[in-house]
Image (tube, rainbow, N blue to C red; front, top):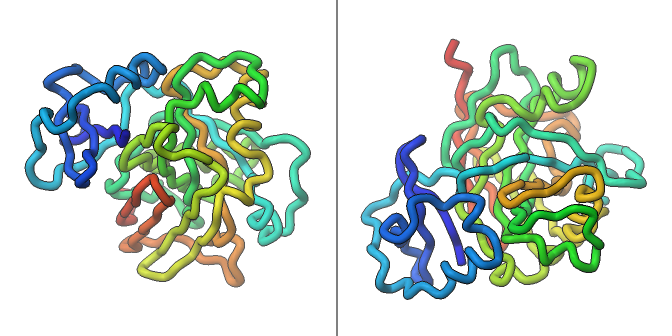
Length: 282
């Protein structure tokens, strides 16, 4: 299934994408596509629906993040071997974990707003992993059983805030609008092997990133197991798993996002995102 939420910001309604690529309205059956619906039982109930009997949604509505009730927005740094190579950094011995503020969440087609004093905003296409069952100290062998599905994430990052302003890197990761998620959540059964997904990102029509999740240093199962030994993973928690090569700050000379830039990103089976970069309004 491809689950989604559509409508104006703050007024999104639950829906799903049918086999013809059309949005069907789920609000006639459920009030919200919440994290509780991502449990194995919740997903089985949705999968049992007769999709053709659900109302069609007319037009091309705005899409929000695919579900409501995300508890934690976790992220993994330097998790692709080819990305580590392009940045001349050593392969980490354990996953590098940080947190993106939930207030950075953004729809997949909403504008990215450069924060005040931004100078080095960067793009990062990533595979997002959505937790469906509570995970505590789970084994790597069992870890994928706790995954509800996957989604496309752009881990937008302000490199000057992240690297040059002292302290942790989180301050360059959690700026408002720096977490586009979607267009939909694709359930794990439909995705299959999460380590075999092509991914790419263009800026202004030029291909900047090309990669595949097979070059992850730590795969999805390893990440879910690893993190669950440090904190509980709850239904709705999102882990964004790192980026392939081609980021702006690693280019020679570096390239950073400017107002008016257009970003277009995609991951096989998970859909595509498009964002326009705009200036801080103040």
